[in-house]
Length: 259
View 1: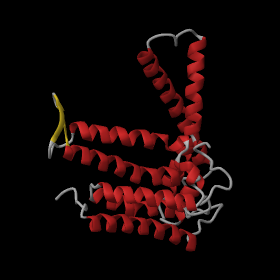
View 2: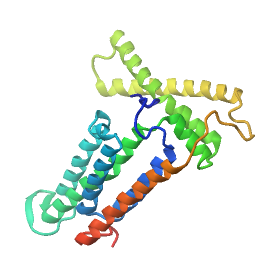
View 3: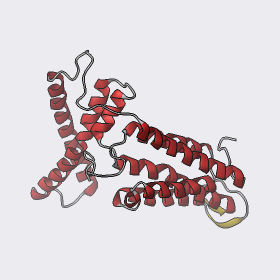
View 4: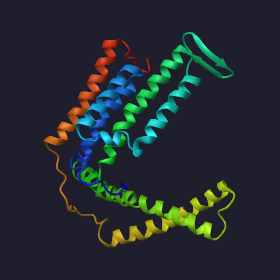
């Protein structure tokens, strides 16, 4: 699945993207307010259950979410090794000081990263960039010029990936890609930047010529609807946040991070 298109028939693909984004906000706020393993673990279990019931269970374990499953443990390990020490010391070596408190913080941090990032990634995979632009402009009333510019930039991400591959093959064919990985990467990145600027300039001129920047109220090819399905998605997000917060309070682990 490319970044510019959503697989046909994917569940929740027809839901307004604004509602999907709004559904992740309550849970993110709850998990940012507290640092405990209970709320994050309950949130993860609820997310797995909700996405599985919605038909998105396969995306939870796909390659697109692999970065979440890799980054979360690494974040937790860093907190275990270098977090604020408290409680009994389990292991100590130089600046590394592993204690019972740092282990608890590491586990809570790992669970919190998964609970926040997982729904964001899964829901993003069900969002079409054009639908997102329609929702931002028609539902949230954001400036059309900004929305359409962002949409055009997002559409060009795939082209930039293709350009990078083409540059790699071209440099390899010319015999200048056999050594000096860092130097080669920096030079190739500069060349990609030049290509991106040139393509962006041409695209901006074309959009201006077609009236995309005209100071008049524009029309839209597709109407962004916001109805029962969208409110239901937001309601589920609020419910998951409430369940996670309630579980932490009842377990006595609710801990506001700045207190």
